[in-house]
Length: 353
Image (tube, rainbow, N blue to C red; front, top):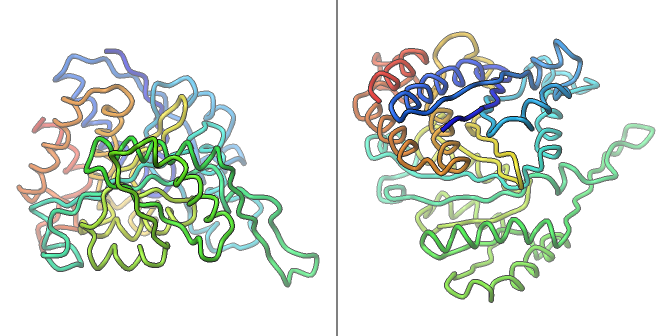
């Protein structure tokens, strides 16, 4: 199999963790007889520094031409700390999702047996947790118009907009995933307050009869935020809008013990993008201490979702579990005094495939 992957390392720790994923993908390719080629492109603050644009046209062309995209992270403190900045790295991420048609973000949350003790939750609450969020990515309050401030700068406003079609295409993905899992789907909304949420609930209710084998529940976002901590094992597949999904998936990510462990996929009609759910973590950039496992597992999702290469994806998951059991991990999850560097973890994973 010949594969072309667009590499978008991005900002902060992005280049370091993406480099380790490349090592692992190359090792898998060698093991299974595949031919992998990479096209690297700039995005985020790195792209602003060179092009003045967080998502240049050249980057867009490279992504469109690739079979799949592996992305690192976006964000830089020099923009975070400047509320008057005219262009921001995150604008590139939103524009990339919109222009590539990446309307569904798939974020699994699961636990690792050897790391249960690292979870902030009690063992009996977290052990066996295995659910997945389907978050709508290209609409909602992040994209709605109008937005901005009044002339005096004393009032700000954002608009939350959804169409039935946008909700239905994501909901169908969730239903289909539930059919392959434990046949339970939760629609997360705020239908007691928001008109957009009432449209979400109405649309899902209309679709539900098409999937009679799936049990559907409807829960308010604040209740889900509590239950994710109280009893995360209660969930299987959850679908929700952009803003709610952004917040809840970050909350869910720490259940496993570290945000540096969770992968994700952004899916659309054509191009598929894969990325760790953590941010750019600028405090660790260049120090060779960041956890690369979420990016490595995102590469496993890339092989599985983009190419149906299940055996190859399982090989990566297996070697990641092996590294956790062997204690070959970075400082965020290592026992005191036993941390390995980012590059050392990548080297170990590639060698042990």
